[in-house]
Image (cartoon, rainbow, N blue to C red; front, side):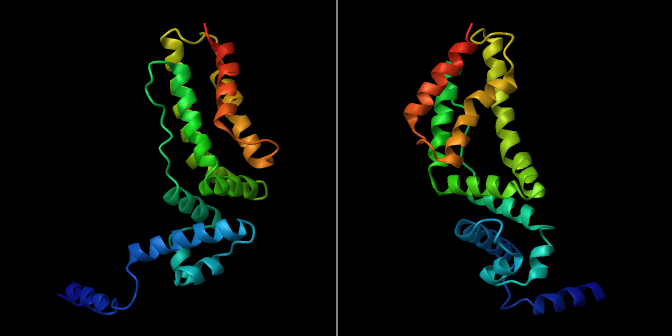
Length: 201
């Protein structure tokens, strides 16, 4: 009986306050918007709390650090389908996936990726979160595609998968961050042709 009374008392305090899931979403949106505007280093929990109209304790109950919050905000807002299409050719599947990645990098989320990588140079927790939650899952997916290429006889059996992934994808992030040359579909085509030619049987 006492449990029922206690539950009713808690419910009675709820009207006028954002529900937990609503507050959670507002925090994520506030973190993403502010990071887009001022970057990771200038971002503060106080600013996020003010934008989301919640107290800082509400944020810290969900995230132990700014890095974890920012990474969750990024993943919630940007979850592009960067899967490898089954084109009948490993090389063409990689080409199509990389072209889709370039579209993402050229969009507003691409600038957030640049912010995360940049902020991660001075925040070990942020770069670790980025690697674990965004980079590594995508490298694993690419690794499976390369292994399939070896198994079906399209790629050499002695291919170093990790080096091959770096050879293909690192130039995209190099251009994203340094902006010394444009990220284009033509660049992807030439890059894929050069790298995959060296990996083919």
